[in-house]
Structure formats: structure tokens, C-alpha cells
Image 1 (cartoon, rainbow, N blue to C red):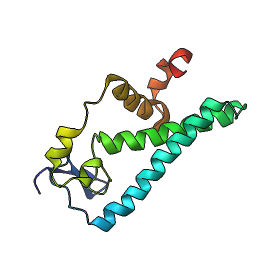
Image 2 (image 1 turned 30 degrees about the vertical axis):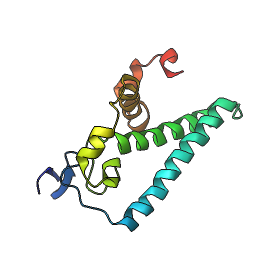
Image 3 (image 1 turned 180 degrees about the vertical axis):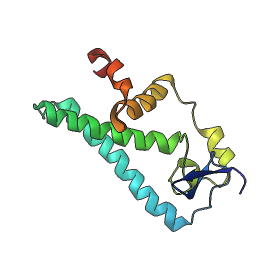
Image 4 (image 1 turned 45 degrees about the vertical axis):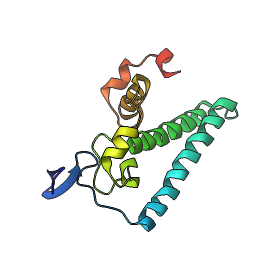
Length: 141
């Protein structure tokens, strides 16, 4: 299929879409169900932002849990709007458009701050990396 590349992983072929091209057209029911999950991600991001800002946690471990939850939900949303390597079963914004080009033209450019956040989430929260050691306390704030 055009727009896909096959990747061998443990003797299985996983298909990844390069971008919106070559993605399966989803039914209205699939998109409705996916939108419920999208709504949840936005809601959780907002809840965690409020919790972090309120200072209610008072406990460093609980505050860190709020931050990590916020970061994971932020990553889900970044991957929805600005997917880097979407799998064919990933829900991404382009799925909600009849033509991928329509979304690509409407979507704002990814700002430098969003690029930084996307990279930091992967390096500092979602994966255990040596890059974490390079982040100062000021940068974490």
C-alpha cells in the first residue's frame, strides 16, 4: 500500500504509515468512539494541570505523579496532532478528515516549544535514557 513502510520486529511485519497517506478510512462509529478517548486525554491533561498548579499535593512523590500523568497525556495529544511515526491503528487527527491534505493545510506549524516538549517527554518521562542526566533542575521547573 502506498504511504506505508514495513518494519520487521521479532519475525513479524509491523506496518507504519508515513503520514496521513495510505491510512484506512475509519467509519463514523470508529471516529465517534475515538473522539471519546480524545476527550478523555484532554480532560486528564486539564485535571493534571489544575492539580499541579493548585499545590494540593504537598508531597513530592504525589506532585511528581501529577507531573508524569500530565506529561503522558500531553504526549498522547502531541502524537495525535503531530504524529512522528504513526502505526496504522493509532488514532491521529488526519483520520477525522476526508483528505489528508485538508488537515495538513489547516494544522498550524509545530512551534519550537512543542518540539522541545515532544522530545523531552520521550527522553525524560516515557523512556529511561541517559539524556535525563543532562536536564538541570531549572529546566524541569
